Length: 269
Image 1 (cartoon, helix red, strand yellow):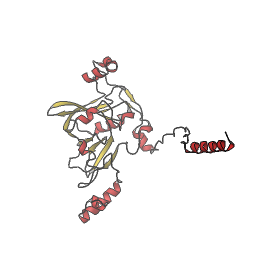
Image 2 (cartoon, rainbow, N blue to C red; image 1 turned 45 degrees about the vertical axis):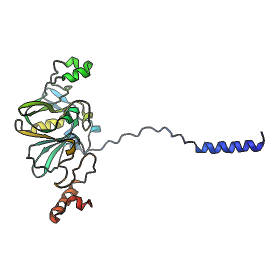
Image 3 (tube, helix red, strand yellow; image 1 turned 90 degrees about the vertical axis):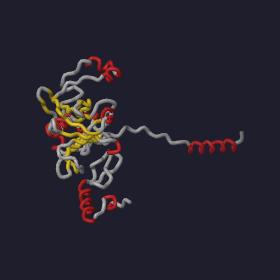
Image 4 (cartoon, rainbow, N blue to C red; image 1 turned 180 degrees about the vertical axis):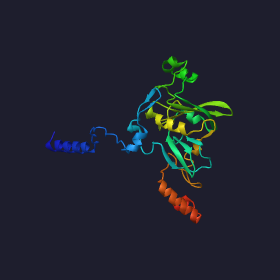
């Protein structure tokens, strides 16, 4: 082998090496960013004694300005006191006057998406008893068999601190709006359950609801985001970018004055 052959081989090896992908260095996972919330917000979700049961505070990790209960703009023809559940965007709205609503973030299970339409709340329960369904017993007997005859209300009960029972045509729909001892499930979709709320939120809602008279509407998937924008404009859903409330109100006033829609003002067709 000549010196020239060796040199050519080294050059080619260098070129091939230069074309190889550079190994990505292993970097530590970044620390998750936790939104710093005002003290008055954290107080809404602090621990509390409710009768004989202590309710744990909600870890700030599960809270943000988007998930806390708050009064928001909401446009609907439903009368004040009506509950509107949007299981697709995972919000529950308690309608108030003057295009406003109290909004709560919820967790949704399969049952929460199977049910839609109107119902009423004839009654509610504080620290309700829970019994697993036959389907739960069949799917996961190891977990649910010990509770076949039911579980008394308490800190570990899946129905949480309060439950509102939905009826239609005088019959129980088996659909519930209830609390949960699993705050990490709020704002998510899971395999079981109806509509779950933070314990502190379901207590707040329970106190506001007129049991025996409250009407409930559960939206279909094609109605997701309904009510989040003024009439005649596209709703804000989980797949769209919301505009600030103040901006929405300003644009709506302009639209009313000029007989235009928000879509036209925003440059839509």
